[in-house]
Image (tube, rainbow, N blue to C red):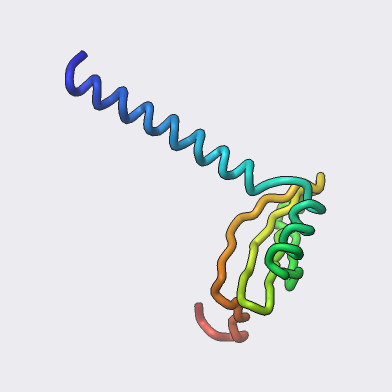
Length: 101
């Protein structure tokens, strides 16, 4: 096998492994909404602050926050399956109306 072929095979292998790792991480951050809701409250003291229906109407996006500044952005399908889209520890502060982003 030539050096170029070896590099190509290694690159493909790394891409496949990265995709599998990303898929596993995404699956770990998803589950029944009731289960995730319970976990966010018990583990982080988070409660829902805001929610909105997606444009397609096929999911609800929620912002969960806690007094210590932790926050979670959660997407729940119409079937009750939820996935954590993002989370952080910096306090969440609403942007004043009329203020440019």
